[in-house]
Length: 318
Image (cartoon, rainbow, N blue to C red):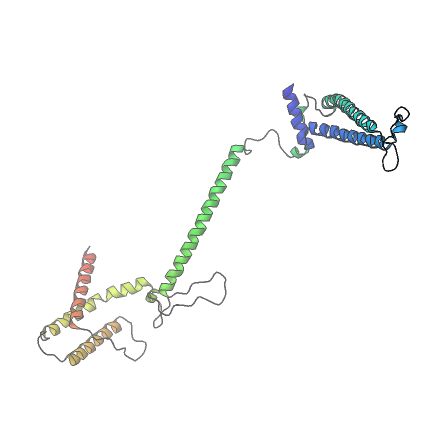
């Protein structure tokens, strides 16, 4: 019986959006408030009525003293007020007991006959907000565990998205720094005609696509061209060996100005010839003067070219 009553109360609470007992309690509280107002009105009416009209007799005939009077000259009866308050309290207690007794019966009758659903109909009642719900539920319907799993998956996805956004911001900052090193302007987020200025002194500007004096070339092509020049450089170094042998010792005297000028002119001519043979000519007729090359630098260059040539030959043989 208790289980059926609890299921009925749950059904009615879901339908009315409040419990049946709360409705009955509100009715009882409303009746009690009316009783309190009625008792207060009765007390105010009795206190405002002259005591003689309520049956309180003046005992001045038996008492030789002058009775007390109020400011209007009316005789004051202290015992009348005490008796009225006592009577009103008894009336209030009687009404409260009567209301409690009668409304207990009202509560029992209401819960059994009005605010109730037959036990055999309770499993078949469908409320309005369950109208679009298909019962029984299909096997593919989400369960509380699946909903909880999806919620956790969504939380983890949001965490991953946040981490990727931070990583993207760090990568963008790193790319901007790398672009500054090669002198390449970075594209702003808002598409407009303005671009970030290119640094005047980029340390790795020769790696960038913007070259001031020559068209841009891929790094692979430049490396292949450099490797292709190794045989020509080896030949030039072989020609330089006799000239280095003919140089005086460190203790001797040498006109360094004339010797340096001759060496410079020879190296410039050889380099120009190699460049022209490979199809790369000067863009203008002006010859760019190179710096002075000492004998020690030539020997070091020879050793580097020999090492690179040996490595290239070994790679070709393999």
